[in-house]
Image (cartoon, one colour):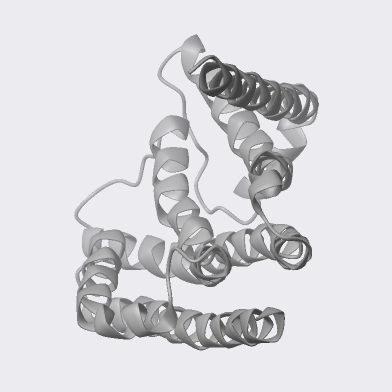
Length: 241
């Protein structure tokens, strides 16, 4: 019992250390992002036809903080993934350690690809569609806070959705998932992805299709990659036996 309690305390100490590293990385990146927040802001509003407005002094601080947080959060993903890997490493075999470590850069790259897809493809499409609804009936007037909330809501979710293949490969390598289970869950997964696409896109068929197709393609890629990982794992187990 005492040994069990000591092991449990050791796990909590290790987890606390990993969380401190992650939090420290986030704080450093947040400070760095805050220093260059005006450059980030200018990049995001370049080419915008309208001038953004603020309704009070606190709006300026809100924009600075939210932009710095998003940049710091994105940059912290590799460190967070690495610290999680270090935490679960003792429970992994030598071969599993090498394989799962390779997922960390892929996780970050796919997150950036998802953000770019949302920013350069989905956001302009949704933005133009919503402006077209106003026609000449309304005067276009955007506050900075509303604009950036809208921008974040239409781009950030894709960063997480595009990480689906790497997450499924990682869970397959740990034995939590397998491709056969994913195939059985296909219709439920399709339904969930379609609902997600409908929620984050404007209510027109073309926008839904443009988002649904990449998401379904990502899921099928995840199933195929899961098969590769699963077969490799089974082959290693057979050789070990």
